Length: 120
Image (cartoon, rainbow, N blue to C red; front, side, top):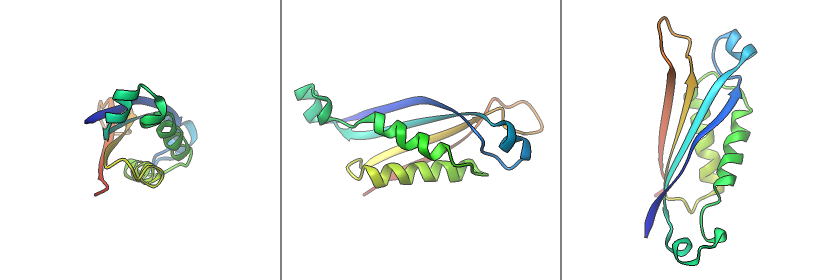
């Protein structure tokens, strides 16, 4: 039985961006993770060892958020690679990285990049 496991709203104050003030002051970034996962064993056993440890997903994401990048594309790709390398058992997953108040010439609450990983 396949199910969807999500870890939404992982929030980080980080120093990504191309502008000097972004690198100096930082900004709020929010990361969302969604995966398709075989939940059969966990659904039956009710044992945490039989499912995806999303605490590990958080830790992998947090580590990548510590390294400044110019572009959301780079941050998102590094998170995807870290998760794919650590969890080859996840066949499909999506990572979305959003930056609050992006530096554009008008009102914009968020800018985002989403990468869909299909390990097959």
